[in-house]
Image (cartoon, rainbow, N blue to C red; front, top):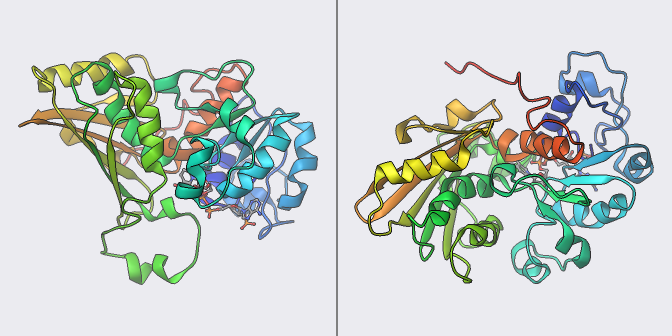
Amino acid sequence: VVGASGYSGAVFTALASNHPNLELRFATSDKAAGEPVASRLGLPNGSKLRFSSHDDALKLSHDVDVVVIASSSEHAMRLAPVIAAHARVVDLSGAFRLDAAAYPKWYGFEHAAASELQRAFYGLPELFGPPPSETRIVSNPGCYATAGLLAAAPLLRDAVASADDVIIDGKSGISGAGRRADEAYSFVELAEEVRAYKVGTHAHTPEIARYLQRYAHGSAEPRVTFTPHLVPLRRGLLVTAYMVARQGATTESVRASLERSYEGKSFVRVVGIDEVSAHAAAGTPMALVGACVTGHRIVSVCALDNLLKGAASQAMQNVNALLGLPDAAGLSTYARFAP
Ligand SMILES: NC(=O)c1ccc[n+]([C@@H]2O[C@H](COP(=O)([O-])OP(=O)(O)OC[C@H]3O[C@@H](n4cnc5c(N)ncnc54)[C@H](OP(=O)(O)O)[C@@H]3O)[C@@H](O)[C@H]2O)c1
């Protein structure tokens, strides 16, 4: 795991170290280099592994089957293609999610690995299935994008919703911003606060539009307006998708569309719209989805844990798929009672 000290990398490392079929071979952090991984991450299994520095990642990756990268997009864009020559990669950053031409605008850098980008597989298993066997890089979807796509995609496919005007309102706990320490993310600034951020500029906007298109009828990308908000939760994320209902759409047909899509999927549960809650999803690898029709709109809500289904447990589903293991391996006993 590269970036194993960050929030999503640490959660993935904890899952990997308890996985019945995986052996955790290395975990990188410059800040914690040399420290025992188990004590730093509060792992129970007494592993002797210590954090390596990021510069050692490439050398260490020669000895493993899969490398999970949980660092910045620019760093992952450079590292993943080199590692992909000898090991498979699951990348949690945004480095392999869009067309190369979109990177300067949405991520602020030129993409330097266009052919790997083109071949990368977008790993949202419930919507796009497992990666083909030749896949070298799986791009793990963004947290808001996972929730927005799970809420909206089936309704476009089944033509109960129009793709012309999809509004995604997202709210995320503060861990979504990573383990940073600057004033804007301090307790005093964020406790009892709710605010929109990156309005019109968040990189999950083109990600949602791009992958919704695969479910929409017609060639044009769905028109998506996405506004993220930070809310004073440690973890958990809730997205409300508003779409224009097509003629004849009812709450029953909308719910049936979601149920058809997610039948038999271990990690997406269709529930009543009032039961979709960030608290109920937080600490679990589950996404909860519920929808209804009101007036001319469909309202579809999805909640998940930004560090699990929005990052680490989805990455584990992708690792499992790359290794031919069951989707839920290492995740099946992962449950939580949330009073
Ligand atoms: N947080 C979420 O909810 C979430 C959800 C989905 C996807 N993601 C994505 O996952 C990635 C990590 O996010 P995060 O929130 O977990 O971040 P984070 O908590 O800020 O942690 C960042 C990690 O990157 C490492 N790092 C820093 N410089 C590096 C370098 N030069 N080379 C390799 N690693 C380096 C850090 O290690 P040190 O110990 O050395 O500082 C740390 O482990 C981001 O791309 C983010 O967009 C995050």
